[in-house]
Length: 276
Image (cartoon, rainbow, N blue to C red; front, side, top):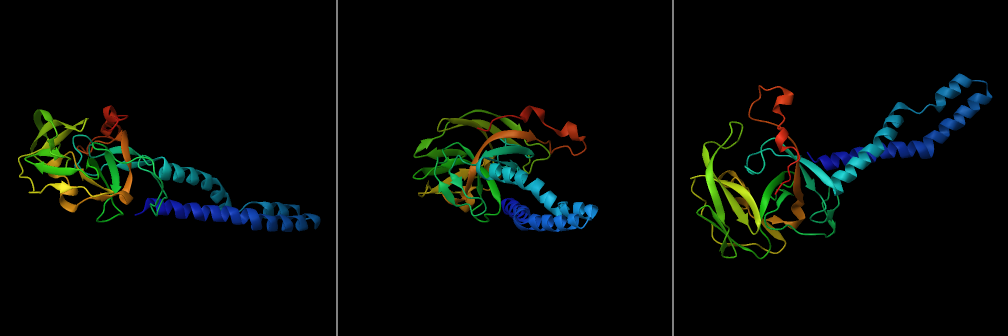
């Protein structure tokens, strides 16, 4: 479901109803009402002057929808984390905000870039439209930018021949609500100056040759390295598929225990955390 398209259709519909009434229908109602007033039919004239309910709703909703549409299209857009591919950085049930102008200003629905601003950098967490199905949004960490030589071997990432440091390894156990199971190793990876935690298991890596990132495309990986459907399996993310940079957790919902009451499932200590 393309929410931006649905919002645009509602915006156009409410705007058209309000505009048509303001330009044509309201004037016709006023003309009829005056004629009825002159004929001594004051009550009927007052009824004719009354704005139809559907016009009243359109007039009330149009500016609200317009503001939400513009903010969502050009400023920030909310997303929900549906899987554990970005553990331990992002949990299932995290609600995040994405900066929509960080990678250029794009027209909504058609996603055509109209103004360039910046480009994804190594280590940034970004949302993009999945190349295999652009109607689906994915979130991953940028590992390779155009021109980079990428190698992932023995749970370690090499960029342009240099290994990305990993330190502070310690056990990590997946929560019951996660789509991954068992035990993993949690380590702090230094991805070209961006320090973040990753998870690895004893699962064998998919054998990959050294990859060169083409111009205008990006290589992305999930922080949950052995439970992530990412560029290792389906290729690069083209620039035209970028949505924006994830920067804030604005709400978090505990998905591990469905028996808790509503307020007990709110993960208060994650709300307001920046994403790095």
